[in-house]
Amino acid sequence: MREKSKTGVYNLRNLFFLSILCLVFSPLQSQENKEYTQSVGRFNFLNPGVEVEFPTGKTTAFSAGLGIGYGSSYPDLDTSTKSGWIYVVAPFLDVQHKWFYNFLKREANGKNTNFNSANFVSARMLVRGESMSDNIERTSSYDYAIGPTWGIQRNYGILHLLLDVGPIYYFDAKGNGNFFPIMVQLNLGLNLWKQKGSR
Image (tube, rainbow, N blue to C red; front, top):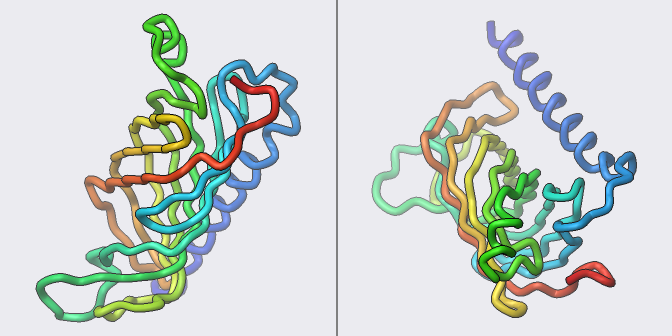
């Protein structure tokens, strides 16, 4: 049963990586004029890292961020019995495919849509690496979380703000995993550049 469980997790992980590759290469096949979404480079403060967001369609974008994050453990991926405040500081890869749905409404109301300022739904995957510092015992050096989100993205000059929430399924490479009802992401950072000729 254990080997079967491991195989299932590996197949699931391979499916996610294949999906990410398809999302990365989808702009190469698209001939649409990227009327609303823009290519943007950012530096985020709260979980320090760099992020690139680029269009995959008129109102869709793919983002990928690398950095060092501060967070908690997932309930079924922690073998310690520690109570109270627990933490994990680890490198991360955070990828999202965003579907923005209110560009036209924001423009009609005279609101900013620069740097992809809009509301969105997304498919998100977060990968955390080996701990740099923690006070728990993780079941594996790597863990993964995937799920849908709803969020808002706003930009004030070069200042960037993102907030999104949604349920996740988290797992490790050893077959451990479970669902978690709500995962919250909050990013505050700076827009460093956008594609030439954009708004």
